[in-house]
Image 1 (spheres, one colour):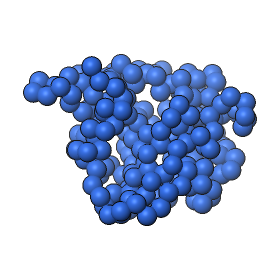
Image 2: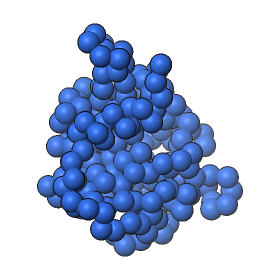
Image 3: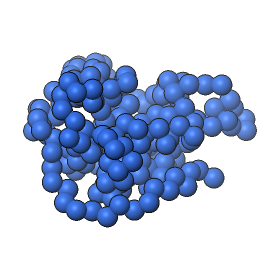
Image 4: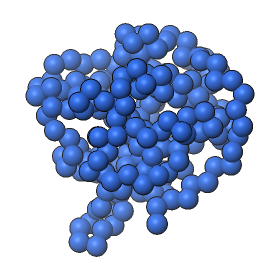
Amino acid sequence: MWWEKTVEYLFVVTYMDREALMAPLDGNHEAAADLMARRNDKWVLIEFKRNAQAIDDEIQKFAEPSVDSFEKAKAALADRDGHHLLVFGERGDDQPIELKALSYFRHQTVDPEEALDCGVAQKQFNSYLHEFLYFKFGEAEEGSGGRSLNYSTVVAVSNGAITHCEGLANYCERMNLGPDLSPDPGPTPSPGFGMGGPS
């Protein structure tokens, strides 16, 4: 038996290094993912899940109606989700927990050891993040019970030592990703959602 935080801790102590820029985004109101990380000037988004069965819980984090919002996000972003990963645990043959990773929308298998090398340049990362947050927020207004960037916890920046902290809202403002977070993704088809899942 293990928890989502067990998976997150195992990933960090196994694969993160002191030269990586890390941004843990924790809590029930997390807007983007559990971790934003930069390695060699390339950025990744990582969402930690307890196990493969918990992956479908991601749909409920999107603006109402959640399934429709998720499907629209998938149609718009799936071909660019190589840097946006789901990392989860499953029982291993030789160890209690074995880490597995999939791309966020397409569920393509990724070696967890290579997860931090799946990053994209900051401009591409920001463009993806901008659209992803739009689909998560939808038309929900601040204070209406929807998710808020202000609820994202502190972004911890590490380059051999912690040098800077900020919230995701500040990051988006500094990168000119807001404040309305409302790109016009245009009409997109809504393909059916098929988890597929790991074998």
